[in-house]
Length: 383
Ligand SMILES: Cc1ncc(COP(=O)(O)O)c(C=O)c1O
Image (cartoon, rainbow, N blue to C red; front, top):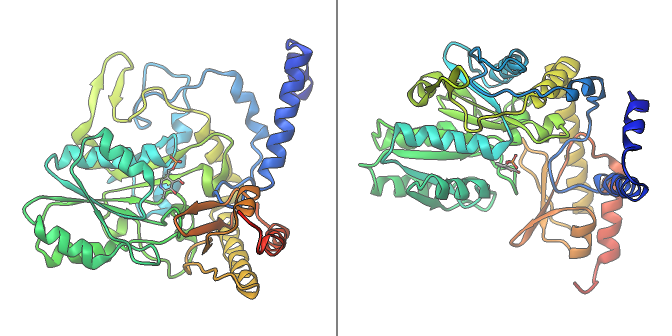
């Protein structure tokens, strides 16, 4: 396999070969200094590389036969089974497909919501990921932003009072299951309590669980976000906690909702139930391999060790005078905005007056110790 790859590179000019070598080296360096973005690097899918020589395409509904059969629908369904198990869903009442990532999953949730409640108003908090505001523009949905509390959780009082004003319009609520910057969770049961209090019969709740959808199921006493709460759809990323060289994710929803939007397409011999037509058939293989080789116990261990390391990071930062904190169910360590040199070097994320670091399975104590040293060295430096 390796020798074939080397031989194929011979088709390139020396200049192009050198360009690729440099690019690879540069990416290696950069990959070692990512502390702000949640992409696990603990994976090895090389045993599957053989599949890359095929034009695999998962076009169509994964649960239905399609006239294009170079697909991994069977594997995709097994991946969906794993996610349904983690989210208390079941195949007879829930459905899903492998997406390109969190944005597509959020778009699918809001698309279903709009088809079910065309007059609905979307409520989402200030801390909601930017993909949602973009999707609201794409789908031309009426929407209202709700205040967030300082810790990133939606302000339930503001949500209640705003929905009260528009009580005659069905609410569509985006619940953040792990906000991008603070890892905060908007509790679905609490949101449902508000809807009950206001006697609102028709509503839709989508859970954006991009990162925390693969964290909360492995922690005891984590806030409930899964189908047992009655949530209508959930989006989870695959390239974050699972890890993948190609961005991916899943969207899961109540099956009955999907029946409402499905259209039969003769050209592909399947139902058109997904946003993308042609879909990645390799990423389901990667996620399947990750679940088979790590198992839920393996992920539980990974998540718990990330939590322990996040505790170490918070304590170590506090000891040098940085007011760092984290939610008990999140590996996102929130800090005041750090010096730009440090932010740039460690690819930390910044937003307004805060920065964060996210402890993922590839992050270790040395990373944190080096970061601490850089913070101390940069103390007093001009930006
Ligand atoms: C909470 C949340 N939702 C959605 C997304 C979008 O995910 P993607 O970049 O996979 O589209 C992210 C990405 O970081 C996120 O943090």
